Length: 219
Image (tube, rainbow, N blue to C red; front, side, top):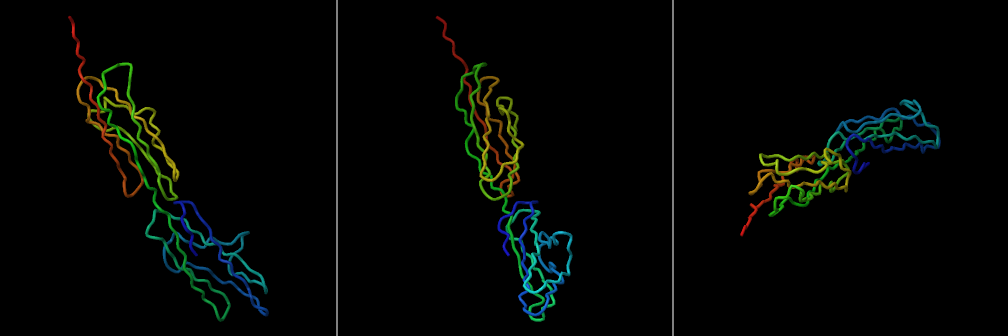
């Protein structure tokens, strides 16, 4: 069976239905065992405190739950082989495979922090917005963000929304203010965004702005 896409640490169950199709004899289900493959798959046990072996009367059936509990991101796909043992002389043991995926989150970042030329004014703080999204998959994107660099005294994050976990197809904006402490070019600062995306664990966005000196002409 194919479990499809499953979130890390969130179990999913697929039932293997066993039917006694005999018109004469009872069927004894002796065991269901993972005989090869990834340990993220397991036989989850029977409901109502039942245990194997179980005997099925003619025409009766039972569901054997197989669990996929991914402990990490994929690809590659995770697979396992199970063996069902019964007292059926023709079809026991029955060997079958299962598979499943747990795709990693995919971070996307849009926007920039080029403030251009800004006149010094203690009462104003120009803003730029960078948007962080979890673009794909089924897993949460864990994000942190901070300003890093010797010149970050000229910039500030307004109400930093991170750290945060972003669900799939969800975005969060982060607003950075330019707060120059004096005239000149200010660019020794980066907005550093870290995440659990295994392909892009860290993204740096340079922040820059220029504040010209005021010119006074007195006649």
